[in-house]
Image (cartoon, rainbow, N blue to C red; front, side):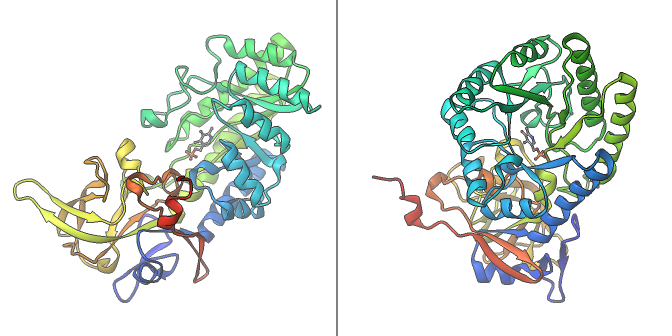
Amino acid sequence: MICNNIGINAKGHLTFAGQDTTELAAQYGTPLYLIDENKIREKMSTYVKAMKENFGENALPLYASKALCFKKIYKIANEEHMGVDAVSPGEIYTALQAGFPMEKVYFHGNNKTDADIEFAIENRIGYFICDNLDELDAIDEIAGKHGIKQKIIFRLTPGIDPHTHVKISTGKVDSKFGIAIETGQAEEAIKIALGKKNIELCGYHCHIGSQTFDIKPFVDGAEIMLKFIAHIKEVLGYEAHILNLGGGMGVKYVESDPEIDYAANIKGIADMMKKRSAELGINMPLVLMEPGRSIVADAGMTLYTVGGTKEIPGYKNYVSIDGGMTDNPRYTLYEAAYTIKLANKADKAPEKEYTVGGRCCESGDLIQEHVMLPTAKKGDILAVMTTGAYNYSMASNYNRIPRPPVVMLKDGESYVAVRRESYADLMLNDL
Ligand SMILES: *Cc1c(COP(=O)(O)O)cnc(C)c1O
């Protein structure tokens, strides 16, 4: 199995976090998002522990909450001593409602509106990850109005290609995010920020991309950032004390993906950084990271009911499910790979190749192609593994399909963290 929270029980049914998925499907209905709470806590504590061990007590992983966002997640993140990365006032609002301490929230985004900035400052957000100079001006002005000096970190592009899918690659010079180091624009921006009355520049941020398996792009990115800290210290006399290395460590979705040792990666990055900081004559900065996918992806599984199958002789076999791109748009967006099983036939050998089609009126609404399954029948429960990240958080109401509930699994118990949307919920804003 691709993760140690997946198994098969004596009935031949697929289990998740030790529970029979066919029973969960019967109890809560489908489509259904399952989230293994203990797995999330285990991943968070892996990051917290490894970062403190290797980067020092003040190092802090920030959970990138865009990966999976609802109230309970912020409570868990707080209990596990994480900070969070939020990308919109909606996420900040959710964190507030969960009682998450605002000083540990880092506010991202390449187009924060003045209203967004106002909202964040009013709520005394810890840090802005400032994306550009227009934003810098707005933060300076609004912070001044509130009589505070706002802490910021500049988002910079180190010019790294992590060789991941182009739609989730963000560290190259040509990116909509951040300010480029290579063009001299980052240095210019720092000069300007240092002259702003209501801004406290605390350091730099880079995020090279997502679903990256190799440690090398992270090490290379961190090294470029250290050199930049040294360069700015030399030319401007300003030494950044925070370095945020972003998120992006990969997750095993299919058997052919490598296993990732997150703690070892963190150690590898830290070893290089300690050595290079000393060589460059700078202090080792306080290190932040922003893991999203690697915290929640394999804590998730989605269950669907098979509505029917269709065999087109000489072409292919379709299996249709009661969800689709509305609850998981990732195959439609970038052909994301997933492992798929029939939960009620988990002990049966694969017999046929299927295309898993969603229920939306869109030919591109597929969850996966070329999936080997036992012969599927109406009423089977189809399970898609590793859906904790970028599934519920990317869900939509296309075709007026209500979003599935999020059911959390913990120590043999289950509870609803987000209830299933009703048809009335879909009409909430219709006048
Ligand atoms: C998306 C994103 C993350 C999280 O990336 P993962 O691949 O989910 O770990 C972290 N930081 C920034 C700035 C992001 O855009």
